[in-house]
Length: 601
Image (tube, rainbow, N blue to C red; front, side, top):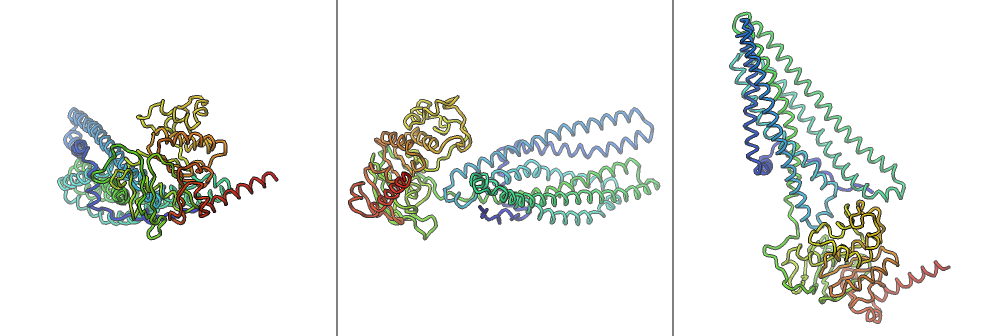
């Protein structure tokens, strides 16, 4: 097993800022704009309160400490304490508000992606690995959460704080402000190096994380094959390589941050040392008070804090642009099969099916069906047979509108299926596949798929009709017994019977069986055949089968060969014609007979 999915799109980071993407992202804030405005107002007040701290310290030193006014100093200390507590409370409210908005936006985006994925055509999932789609719904959305909860408003707050601090610094002493600004080129250089290095590190983290997600999905799903062929050590080794690469990429990111932030601290320390020296000289010349110098140093400390934050926000912004680009690329991909503007419905659905010169290719021009035409009358049981690759399953996929045909037409009761909504078409049909998918949950939920319109009585009736009711009712909690993921504790036959009960609970007008009995033993098959004879009464039925013994009683048999309809008739008529069906039947009969003789010998 190899992971062949391309990862080039995981490596693309794009621009650090894209105005079009940002405008589109900000639309998710519209339902919460009142909270966003409230958060911005809180941020404004918190910024003013934080800037007032150094001013209060300056006043306390110059007016009260220097003059020995203990009473005034006590009042100023209480005022300073009140400002700090107020700033803390309002900061908490602002932080909580933005985090809540981030979680709500994250929820909205995830729901939008999942809703979009449910509408996509099956060929989309054929071309997109599950691991990549999971990454979109999880990791990429998490990155956007950082943007909304810690990015958009926080950047505004940092810029606002910087402007306020610069104004205050210039007010106290433009000479000291120039000394502080003199170290900014070194900060800009350090930031530029940090951005370039962290960009490459982040790209590597995203790349290897995506590969690990895809690898895990593939190999956990195929664990039985891994264990069957004793590939545990080799698979573990391959996972270890990817996991090591991810660890190394994360370590590089940690190293870059570990160098950058101390570098900023060093630059800040140098600026502070210069200020103390020059400020001390000015105090000696009575051009500056001690309180003003202390207040200025506190402003410088606050000056470097938003600069560090903005560097980190740049990384969040860049990763958010990359994630949003991938998410919007997914959301902008329209489903190939969608309901028409005015979908038609059939007042009295009978169940007639007409294939009219239908041609279909998964990848043009490699057609798997060519000019197929046949009619299934209401209540008729038609079997579709043929060798592997003849196009049998493709007929069912087209009828259910999982894929769209290129030529011809398919009609239900005289109405083209392209004129009806896919959801309406599927509500009239039930499909039973050879490979049954069992969901986590109980037996009841796996039969009615948690559809409240299907009552418990109908669930039990469907289970009795297919012969699985006795097994379910022997369980400790009967129909409320939990079924493990993918039906791990059920036999193949039990899964198949459960899928029959699921189909019948929906009481379809058209029943499609795609190799539905090929994976069960003779006893279970006999049980299913007995149930099917009753279940197909009054229903239009299409039976796709390799085992010809299961379709001998069909009203008509359609023989597919290399994508074309080659023969049609009853079992007896086709045997008498001695064509393709006769050859298939003789091959299976002789093989089965030979196997029996060999077993007896």
